[in-house]
Image 1: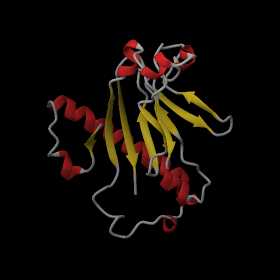
Image 2: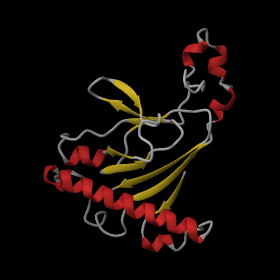
Image 3: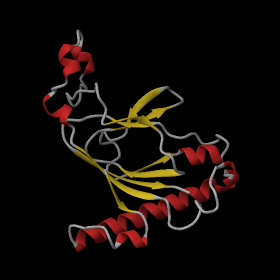
Image 4: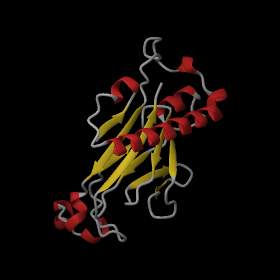
Length: 189
């Protein structure tokens, strides 16, 4: 994982591979940042900044929001070479039927993000799952139903600032048979 972009001052020091890549990442950052601002406009009347434990110095420039690139090698998915699967009495139950990848070990365990919103470009390789509170089940978002789409997660600052009107979204990244790249913008205060 690495931070691609945080604010204008940092941008100049990022070792971009080339100008085309830099421009593409800047454009994507701008789109995700704008989109998250529009999302915040929808909930801002339900939001009380005083509920957050943020000092005035923390709520100033530079922007604490981040744009991250996560690269998942998915070594467990390539050859189903997981020691837990090999030693289990019921190894088949630990294999994902669609991808034949080991699901004993997630790329990223279940968690919520610390900011207001996370805006993520859905990957073409499966991995991202969100927890559906209503049905108490994990839902795979990157299964081809939503190509070229964005997904927005509510985060911890939004949950606290809205007095739990908007719950933070629990999500995880499961392993898969191939490597995947995930582009994520986390709007923070």
